[in-house]
Image 1 (cartoon, rainbow, N blue to C red):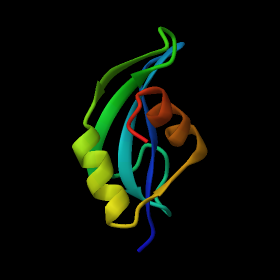
Image 2: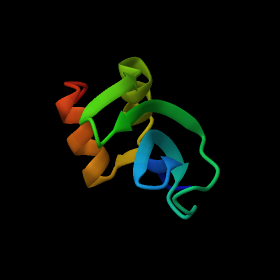
Image 3: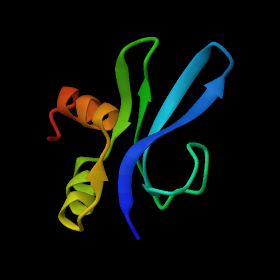
Image 4: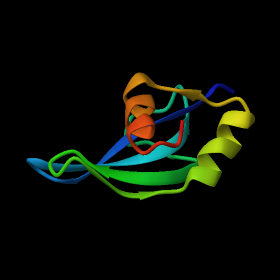
Length: 79
């Protein structure tokens, strides 16, 4: 099973909020996730919450990171 760290969209119309989650690579964007690593608000360009110890744990387990999630984690200085 290929596991990826990626974004899952939440929030209301015209005001998205994304969760940084660990999911199976084959599942849809709003599908079932394995773990929540943080939350990102693109309108205000800020991280609401991030759990760096969980991010490092999943990377050590071999989870791939999508490009968008990698950019957000670099802003948070986790990577």
